[in-house]
Amino acid sequence: MNQELLAILDSIERDKGIKKEILIRAIESALISAARKNLGKHVEDIKAEFDPQTGDFKVLTAEGKEVSGDFGRISAQTAKQVIIQKIREAERDVLFEEYKKKVNDLCSGAVHRFEKGMLIVDLGRAEGILPKRELPPNEEYRQGDRIKALIVEVKKSSKGPEILLSRTNPGFVKRLFELEVPEIYESIVEIKAVSREAGDRSKIAVYSKDDKVDPVGACVGMRGQRVKNIVRELGGEKIDIVRWSVNMGEFISASLSPAEISGVKTSEAERRAEVIVADDQLSLAIGKKGQNVRLAAKLTGWNIDIRSKSEIEEVKEIPIIEIDGIGPKTEKELKKAGHDTVGKIIKLDLKELTAVKGVGKKTAEKILKSAKELMEHKVHEVRDKKNKENRVARAEKERELAAEADKKAKEKEQEEGKE
Image (cartoon, rainbow, N blue to C red; front, side, top):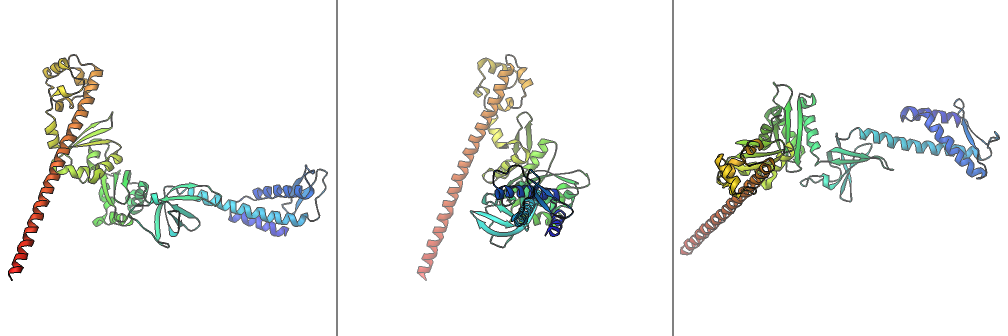
C-alpha cells in the first residue's frame, strides 16, 4: 500500500498540479485527529511523520511511542479520504482559475436543463448559468440546443465554479466583432464603445490606427458578410457601425446614424450636445420610442438634445423678458447690446454675457441656464403641438379612407343587387 501511495502522490502532483507536500501535510493532520479520537482526548501531544522513501506514516505520542493496533487500517482509510477530498478541492480550484481568466470571453455549450427560469449550459468541464434577464426577449432555446454566450462573472462555490453567462451584455457584441473581423483581432481597428438594447438594436463605434484601413468597411465586410454573420448570431438584431472621432461634434453626428445631421453644438462642461436636423430627419434621429438618440447618448457618454430646424425657427424669436432672471433693467441693457431674443441669448457664452453692463457672473449663469430650459420647454410644446396635429390629420385620413371603402362596398352591393 505504501509504495502504491507514493505512486498516487506522484501522479496527483503531475496530473492535478497539487504539490505532494500539501497532500502529505493534510494526511498528517488528518491522522493526528484520528489518533486523538482513537486514543482519547487526554492524549494531547501527538505528531505524525511521513517517510518519503518508503511511504510509511507513523503517529507518535509525546514519549515517542508509536500508535499501533487497529490504527494502521484507520491510517490507510484516512489517507485515502484526504487524497480524494484534496483532489476534488484541487479540481474545483483549477476550474475556478481557468474560468476566472475567461471573464469577458465567449464560450459555447449545449443547453443542459432549465432551473428556476435559468438556462444551465453544459460547457464541457463545468456548467454555466444563463439567467432569463441575460437572455434577449426574442430568443428561445430547447434542451440540447447549442448556445454561445459571454462569461461575465465567476464565483467560488462548494460545488465548483459558478459561471454567470450573458447574451444581453454589450460585451457580447464586442467579442463577436473581435472574432469576426481580423483587423480588430490584429489591433488595426479598435472598438471604442458599444451601446445596446438586446434583441433590438446595437451601436458600435470603431476607429482605425491605419489611415489606409476604413474601420466601418472592415467591420461590414465584403458584401456585408461579416456584419451579417453577427446579426445572424444575434437573431436579427440591427447593428449601426459608426466611425469614432476625437471631435465630439463629429462623433455625436455619426452616433445618430442613420439620420443626417445638420449641425451640432457641444458643451464640454455639461457634456451636453444640441443637435440640429432637418424636419424630415427628426423622427429618424430620435428613433422609435426614442431608441436611436438613447443609444447614441450611451455610446458617446453625452446628453443629446435634438431639435428640428422648424422648431428652432419657431421658438428662437421668444422675447428675452420671458427668461427667468431678466428684469426690466437687464432687458434694456441686453437689447442695447443686440441680444433681444432667446435664440440670440443661448448662442452666447459666459464671457460674452458678462460683458453686458450690469450682468455679473452669477446672473449670467442663471440667465443662460434659464434660457436653455425655456428653449427646451418651448421646443417640446411645439413638438407636442405638431404631434397632436399629425395624429388628428392621420385620424382624419383614416376616417376618409374608411368612408371611401364603405362607399365602394355599398356601390358594389347595389351593382350585385341589380344583377
